[in-house]
Length: 300
Image 1: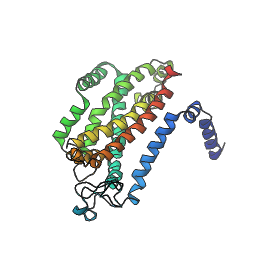
Image 2: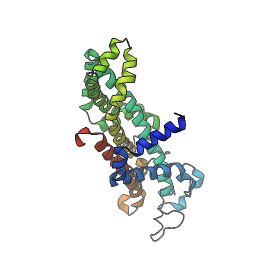
Image 3: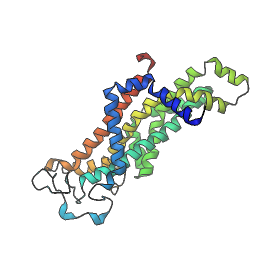
Image 4: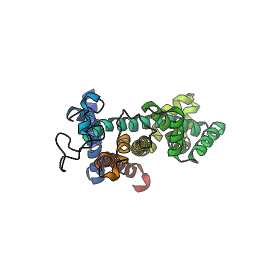
C-alpha cells in the first residue's frame, strides 16, 4: 500500500471513529474548539490588525490615557476598547498579552507533564525505594496550596517568563506523576509486560515502547485542563506583582494595572482583559470536559 493510500485509510478510520461521531454531536466540544481556535488565531495574526504595538513606547501618547471605549462619551477610534494610564490601547494589549499568557500556559504544561510523566513512570515501574521517595516528595508538596508554592518560588527567583515556567514546572508535575504512577501500576500487571522482560528487553525500551503509550490517555484530559489552570496561575501571579515584568503586557498584568482605578469609573482597563481570560479558560475547560467523557471508560 502506498503512503498516500495509507494516509487516506487513516483519515477514513478517524472520520468513522466513535470519537469523531461524538464530537460532531457535542455542542460542548464544538463551542470549546471554536473558542480555542479563535483565540490562537487572534494571538498569531491579531497584531497585524490592531492599531498599535503596546511594547513600542513610540506608539504611546499620554494624552490618550484613560480614554473610554469607543461607544461611550469621550471614546474615539481607533481605541475600540479604550486605553490605560499610558495611552496603551486595551484591545492591542489584550492581543499581545494573550500571546504571553498562551505561551506560558502551553509551554508550562508541556514542561510539567514531561517531568511529571517521567517521575510517574519511574515510580510505578520500579517501585520500592524509588516509588517511596518520589511519592513522599509529592505528598509533601500536595500538603501546600499550589499558588502559595508558586508565590514562594517567584519570591526566590524573581519575575520573568522563564522563572514563571520554572515555578509552574515545580508546581504542576505532581498531579501528572500520581496519575501516571497509578496507570503504570495497572499496565505492568499485564502478561505482555512480563513477556518483554523475559525476552531481554531493557527497562528503558519496555517503558518507552510498551508502558508509556498505554498511560498517555490518562493524562490527555489533565493536560488540557492544566493549560487553563496555568494561565490562571500566571494571571494571578502577575496581578500580585510576582509574574511577568510590567513591560510585558500579559493578561494578568493588564488586570493588575486597572485594579487601582476600577472603582474610579475606569472599569474597562481591567474588565476586558479579565473577560478575555475567562473566555480562554472557558473554551479550554469545555474541550477538557469532552475529552474526559471520551476517555473515561466508566462513562461508555
